Image 1 (cartoon, helix red, strand yellow):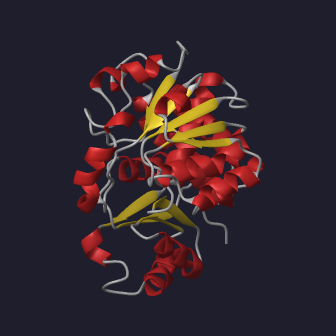
Image 2 (cartoon, helix red, strand yellow):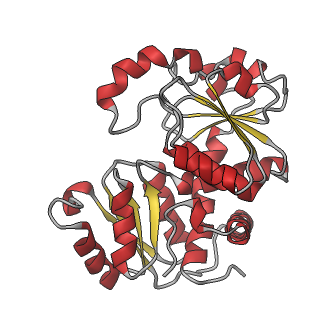
Image 3 (cartoon, rainbow, N blue to C red):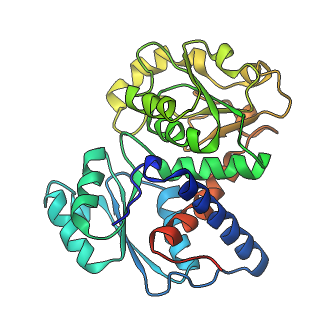
Length: 307
């Protein structure tokens, strides 16, 4: 039973197949105002431990556009791992739905769901990775540039779950990644090792100016994610030199550089209004492309083919 817990679950051919499906389905919807009902009769169970805007709405709308149905299960309804064990929840849901999407705190929970559900499981976010976001990000860059091979992505800020998934996808995309974090906030060594072992060029630095020089894209995210509230005061002290502002954009030396953020943004912290709303921003394209990338993923996982 194939699931999607990390981009490492996709071969290079499958990675590009999913993105091609996303493009086909996006173009189809743009032209006709609807998609073929490729998932008619299919039900996606959506398990949430964390609140969400883009993840919930994009999966819900994706299933609707493709003729299926999405069932939202709130944190209080299931209390994953509290009211019932994760394996028991997986075994029950697997008898009701055709696939499960889970947005959780602990990556181990999504692994347990996949182990016991008997249906495909999608990682909608965990503390280790955010592969659905990265798929949309790679789709956005592909749309923008036509080819990802040889491009440079500069990550500035916290070495978090989104970065891990971007690193996982870098070998498939042919993208080099430069990462600038404060000391002690580097990405997980496992994600860096996976990217390097599979052929991606990854540079780690503590200097944001060095990271962005000549870059084709700058990516940032919040300095304190959900679950890190106790660290917020310390992070606000440490991270200001890593703000993505107009000066940092200009430091790339690239007039065509794009600026990316997975949202929600804490404006005035990791990114300024001038940049988020400026001509280099592709934030809203990324947000829209969550819908299209997830359509491609759902069609691939549930065994259909876009016509």
